[in-house]
Image 1: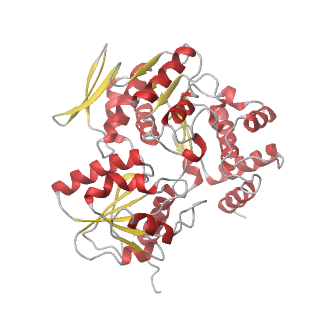
Image 2: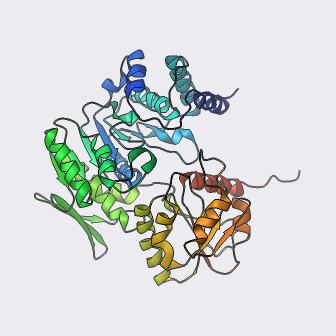
Length: 434
């Protein structure tokens, strides 16, 4: 069995240990950490990142700035698009198959077959790996919520960052914004500075109150720092400094907001303007408004975008981006679409209605709880949008019109991963005849 096969087999065994995909709480994590010497207490200085949208992009900017500052950084993100290795960046390098296979085997032995969710065991792997490899900084993304998330065993982060909060994961976090904000506020630790993006008033009040209770310095965009676009530049300002920076490499107006938070963190750490500028220019975050070259069966003139947006707040940012593209260069707008059952289909599609896209519903076999294509078709049809159901992703692409098409693949990161797998498969050279 090679390393890739070992990783897959171990993940399969992990998936049988608990009857729930998600079971929030820290009791099992603390037990596991104690069994292996509490590696979470031996991390490099750590930035902990929670929020509903923009976590990955904010982390991508910060990681790029860290590199430009001449520092080494561990990065944990989730979920992954194609390979589990993506979740573990060790001192700037994605973990190898061999190292990951060995690490997961070690975690399996530590767990001893006890009930644990897959995410908890993968988080334990992260803590172990990050504690062993030297680095100047660790950036760790929350999996779900914050307060009861497996990553929240971190006791004294150097910084806590909170990206925009919106209604999401209501099956676990509740259907009220206040409850969701309370969960995110759970990463705020005593005497540890907190930086927040602009928030709805209700969420802002909860974050501010929690920070005061924890005696944590709390700074928020629009009040203590701000960022805006002007004449092809990005300007960032706080009480002490005004920076004239390049626009972010990541497309979309919403990336200004994500860059704003990353810059605030970098300034607080004392990083230089040049490192911040170069980080903005070089940041890369696949699957989030990612432009992809068309491949067969797509026509050569197709414009293809991938975005893992899956909640109404993210859809609003997506709609603004598409409106701008359509205004500059009109094209036939088509969406290849799939979603998990836990998501708000109507809420997601609402911001996109004025664009009148043709929706192409496809199955999502890699996801744990997808909406069936027929049920999803009914939900889309109820919005008044034109909708077609397809047997699979390749079938949907083959049935797109041959004239100028602007294609967006969205609704689930699982779908983005499936599309990238298909794109890679089509990009491989065909075997020749000898």
